[in-house]
Length: 363
Image 1 (tube, helix red, strand yellow):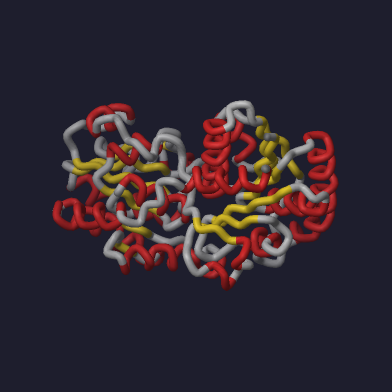
Image 2 (cartoon, rainbow, N blue to C red):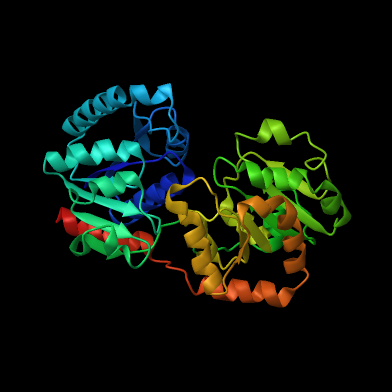
C-alpha cells in the first residue's frame, strides 16, 4: 500500500494523522506513507520527528478578519493544487487520507479528481470547512461523534472515534516515575495545565494572575505547558519561578504527563477529550472561544452532561481556574467520579477502525 496522509496546522490534526500512520505500519509493515502539510506549519517539524517523510504546500488559511493576507489566498491555492498534482503524479498513491486543514483540501481534491481512493477523518462534532467542502467528493468519512449526518452524506460515514497519540492506550509507568521524568516531586498532588500544542493565552494569564494563591498551596504542583508562542513571555514571571510550578514550551511525552497528574486543566479540543477519555483523566475544560461554531463548548458540555468533566468559560479562567483546581483536588471522591465517568466515553479502537476502512477501500 502507498498512502498519502495530508493535513495539519495544529496538534489536533497532526497527532491523529501520525496515529493512523503508525497503525497502518503496524498492520501492513511494508506500507509506504508520505505526509503532505502546509509549509512553515508545525507538521513540518512534528511529522519527521515521528519518523515519516513530509512535503509542504504553500497553502494558508483565510483570515477571519479583513486583512491584506487574504489577497494572496487564491494564488497560494492554485500553487498548492498544482504542487499537490505533481506529488500525486510522482508518488502514485493507492489512497489519500485527509485529517483536516487546508493542505488536505488541496491534496484530496486532486486525488478525487484523478480517481484515487480518498478518506477523511473528522475529529470534531462540528466539522471544519475543508472536510465539509470535501464531503461529496471523497469515498469515506470517519467521524468521532454521532449525529454527523446533518453535515455529511450518511452512506459515506463510519463512526470510529478519534485516534490518539502513541502510548495512551496502556500507561505502564508508575505515577512516581512519571513525575520524576518532569522533575516534579513524587509525593505532591499534580495539576497538568495545557492549552493545546500552541498554548492558550487566557490559561497562561490565569496562572500569572494567581501567583499568591499558587504559592500558598505549595502542597500542589503544576506541570504547565505554556506553548511555544508564550514561553518567552511567561518563563521568567514570578509564577514560573515558584518551586511548585514547572513551566515548559511543549510536552512530547503526554502519556507520562497524564500519568503524573491527578487533574488536567485544558481546552476542549477533540484530541484532548479523546485522550482524557482513554486515560480516564479527571479534567477542568476551558473551551476556546475562537473556534468555528463554538464547537469546543459543545464538546465540553457533552462531558459535563455525563458528569465526566467540569466546565469553566474562558472569560472566567483567571477568577476560577486555580481555585476550582484546588477544590477538586481537596475532594478525592469528586476526582474519582470524573475519572470513572470520562473513561466510559473512550473509544480505544479508533485507529484500528479507520485503518479497517482504509484497507477496504484499497482492496
